[in-house]
Image (cartoon, rainbow, N blue to C red):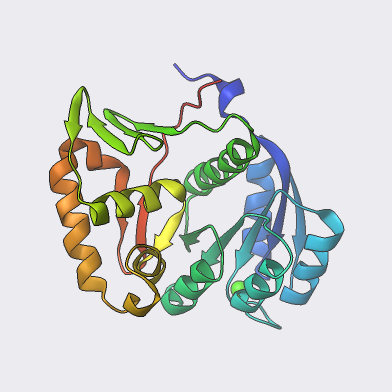
Length: 239
Ligand code: CA
């Protein structure tokens, strides 16, 4: 049974996209939601629209007629924390990863389904709301995985799981960015240090160790091939 009230989110979405067909499709999709859409067709107009409309979330096409979506991310991240979801086409993998490294929150690849995009939007907006709430819990729970961040203890059901310091740091780094894709370079820099950003074999190895120790509790660690990893957050948000 789905509680439609709980799954509704409100806010203003800024769509920076030069393709009128995609703008039309998304406008129709937004009509049934609590979301209000405003539009910009170029990168420079998009930046102005972020200032003018103060959107709750930006949907940003990478291939724009004036400046690239990457340049928009770099500009906007200089002065705003507004969540950004990048719309990328095939062949834009490199730019997409750079957008994430420059602070974009997520991406969807064209052609995308409206339902998938809406789910991503809801996750990002919910994360914004919970990040702003003062009662942030020091315990992360996903399925039968429970991580007590203050006691630095990890449980699978009632069983205590022993992680090495590196495994624990990798897990808590993913938890810190829960719901968001963390690129390989970002994870390597945060867990191993800035000199290790090219050592992706370390990451693969330690993700493997974590998955093995956490067994089915590792289901929340999702591989985004060629990009990075994402810790999925449970849909139900405790009130
Ligand atoms: Ca385009």
